[in-house]
Length: 228
Image (cartoon, rainbow, N blue to C red; front, side, top):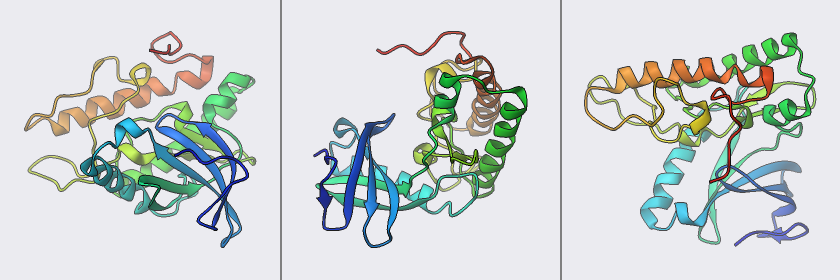
């Protein structure tokens, strides 16, 4: 069920806007109790068709909630199931994404470097908490109106119990195709004993690729993503 602007859900969430997002639908709502705007992210129905799917989504989203506050990560306040759909409630960041800023043009080398440093601070906070994003791209970095960069959508950062040399918090799914490391065009297969190598290749390589995008407006493949 998609909420419509002007609707009030459960007498608590006033719907102000609805947009399509990478994971599904994103609503901007006003929390009438807190008097703050929140982004409500709802996965596509085909991604959560079973009870296990919903539990899996909630577990992954819960790792984002547990990440806590940091100036350069979007705060996820809670996960709540409404209308039989799990929904992520996160702070609303009003300045658009880095992808939007790239599309508008005019980013100077100094501003690109400033963004890179802020993003690195946000990712360092997540890594210190044992979470690896695995889908860092311009669309997943939001901008406050004052220019502060905040990494968002830690939905792929799945907290796992370490088994032998497997690093906790690393999810090997996801990875938007144009932003993957060129040494790894497809996700690593889940097989024992490869976690450390996967972490080096997918994490470090993808980070090097991502930083090319704000400079010239193109993904590191040299082509803009196409719809499939």
